Image (cartoon, rainbow, N blue to C red; front, side):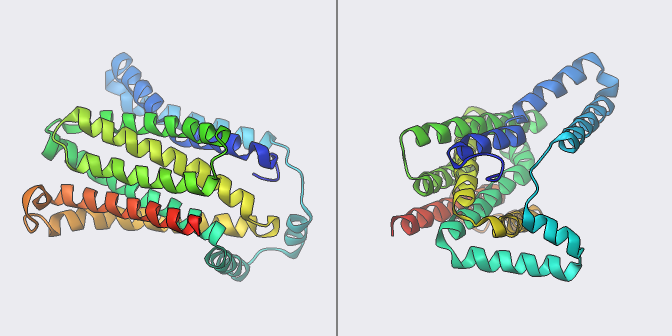
Length: 290
């Protein structure tokens, strides 16, 4: 992205990216409600057709997008492609991330944010049914407020830029806030409080993504940009893939073992995810202050 926009425009460009990815969650809920109202018998079919159309539109826009060619890209295309080269690039990206604190902090911080967000999503449905007693409707409301929180977090990140706050410190605060939001959700029996906690988690997540991506774009060398973001996306997806099966297993395994409200496996797992993300934020703040 740094090759398309100037460094001064990075936060705004990353804000648009995050809004396009996560800020559409509330809009998706509204579109689903419209489909369910107009064509109740064909709501699922209409939703999938609509979703397919958005992918086709995105593909068309990408095909028509004119990007400046770089010498490194031209040289790579001339040399062909191989799995060994891809693995070598990934390993080099990991080494680069591990040895540069300004890049390592946001990369692992974003991975931590994905960890907490994935736990909230995978346990959100059973939490809504077993704890809130509201079924899928409650989860839909919580998910919608999470999306609204993410949108608010994007605007907060842009506001922090105007205050000239250090990007890395703002990133750390946002990450800790995301963990606090997940922790709030874990210890409530009320839909309103759960929605508020999800909004706080979204607020922190939106700020984490925008400021984290901006910090990485600002610090990484152009020749290693692709490999660095390849390492980031790979680590993030590994985190999500691990949480999807592990979180429910942990919730079942600890059911009734811990005292008080933590004896509920779903609450315990969400609380643990919130604590892990918050600790990642605190550690990022400490590392940034050095």
